[in-house]
Image (cartoon, rainbow, N blue to C red; front, side, top):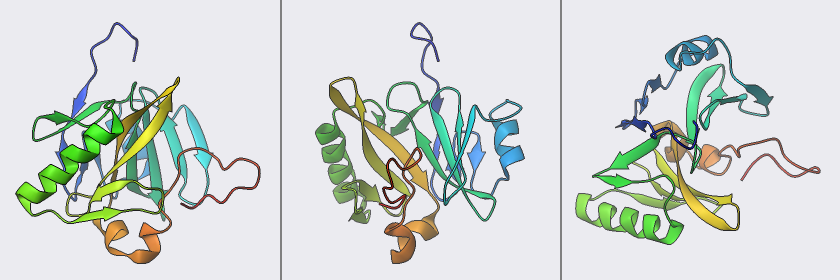
Length: 169
C-alpha cells in the first residue's frame, strides 16, 4: 500500500474471519482471497506464517487459517463500533476496548505479551513499533485459541524468533 493510496477497510466477522479471509481456509484459498498467486514471504515457524503485501500476515494451524495479523500502518483498517483499531496510540485503543467491553458485556483477557483481547470477538489488540512510536494493530484469532489456555499462552509472534528466542509468547 503506497503512502498516497487510501487504506482499505476490512470487516471484522466475529468467529468467522476478517475482510476476505475466513478461518479454516487453505494457503491456496488465502492467496486467492487476497488476489495474489502466493505470499511475499513464507516465514514458517510453529504456525506456518505467511506474509502478504499490504501488511497482512496469516498463520495456519494444521494447514488451515487460524490467525490474521494486520500491520499498524500498511495493513487494512478494521473498525469496531466506528473506532479504527489500526494505527492508534495503544493506550487510547486499549481504553476503547475496555469501554466497549463494559458497554457490550464482552469478555476481556490480557495475554502473556500484554495484548488486550475481546475473547468473544477473537480480537487481540497488539502494539507495533513504528519509528520511535508504538501504534495499535489488530490481530484476529479463532475463538478456540482464546478459549484454550494452551493456545492462549502460545499465540504466534510475527516474524521468525531472533537469536534462539522462543517463538511462543
